[in-house]
Length: 80
Image 1 (cartoon, rainbow, N blue to C red):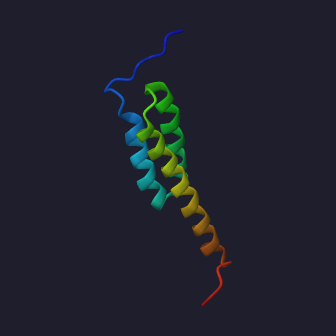
Image 2 (cartoon, rainbow, N blue to C red):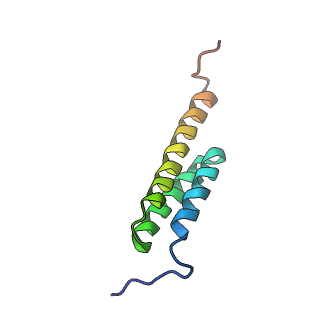
Image 3 (cartoon, rainbow, N blue to C red):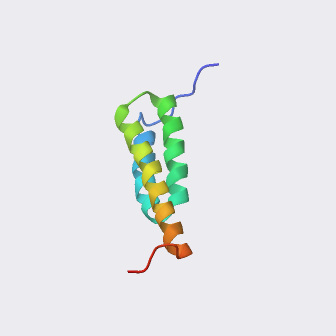
């Protein structure tokens, strides 16, 4: 079965990576989802390192923000 090419060239993975980074700063779950979708689409579109880096960065930033949010929300952070 032949793979279906997406219209518009190889930009979807890059766009999802950028959106994942931005969303990861505010809503980490959305950033993780966009990063994972971007990685999957990168495999379908071709192998550009820039897209892979953007999507992995989106996932990492989202996870870090999520951990920081949980620590601050739970009150586990020591008061100065």
